[in-house]
Length: 79
Image 1 (cartoon, rainbow, N blue to C red):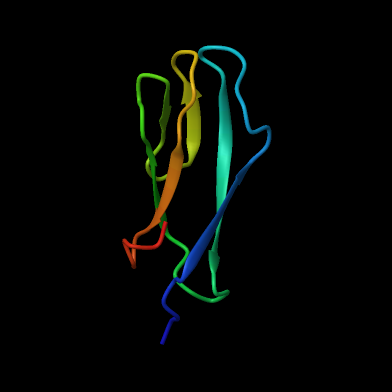
Image 2: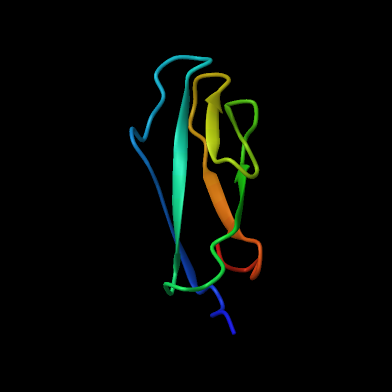
């Protein structure tokens, strides 16, 4: 069977968006290799930035700092 996800590495380039309305793509890699790699994306402050739950596309809304999280669909405690 497929391995259980144990960790997620999230990355985006650049790490910051300088203009309201700008967007960038976030990516994730699930560990160990071969485990289910499906994630759901979320933002801790949608007044600052939103993120497509299935796409990982981050959209700036206002100035500020926000945390974007990828959560394993198979193992919800893996973020």
